[in-house]
Image (cartoon, rainbow, N blue to C red):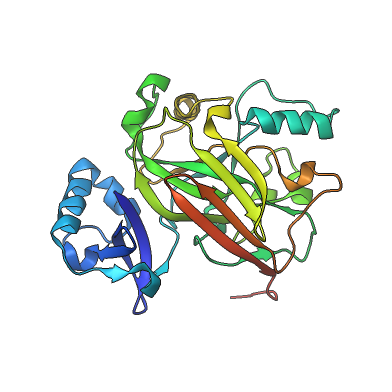
Length: 293
């Protein structure tokens, strides 16, 4: 089942994507929670009810008539893992031989305010010209958990989605935490929907393109750490909650590793595609004037 947040007639709704159409759950099952995070909090019963309602409902809306929004715009946590593709580790070694590489998992925080929709514009900051792309697979937690064994990880996962871990490299390097460089507004597009699955053993091909030209082409079989190991590491430290988003790293081909560096600029179209999950596609625009509210 593919669950999406979408706007139609000036309202954000929760729906089930079926082929090229979407079932509006606010119509098909008005008693269910109206946001994806709340639906996940309802557990297996709520998800099963959503599935049954979608199958019974014959009233569907073409995807071309709606605007897909960020599936989970308000997770409690939006975390990313660095250096998790062997190919990326190797390109960093070649490009920056003086950089020490970590011996353990390196997690960083992306502020949830950076989240944006799967087809929304992303802003090129005025304070830096080092905006980089990182196409990634993201795992969404399905239930509250702590001290999860790697072998039990599939029992706490709701599903998968696609993200672009956009990074302002200059600001990433200002602090060991990397938080500022990872958290500029609009630098966390996610989507296009949440695909409910716990099938994590087979590899998924990931491709990133800029203006139609492929710049990243990797496969999750190249992970340094498995998804189970990721969840075991994090849940040792903190309680993971339904809707938490874990970005699993990026393959080789990032702009910072190119010679000369290949950074994004206004007008670029960035597409991240993962087989069986769909794609997200975002246009880079100049940053807006200062906003004071």
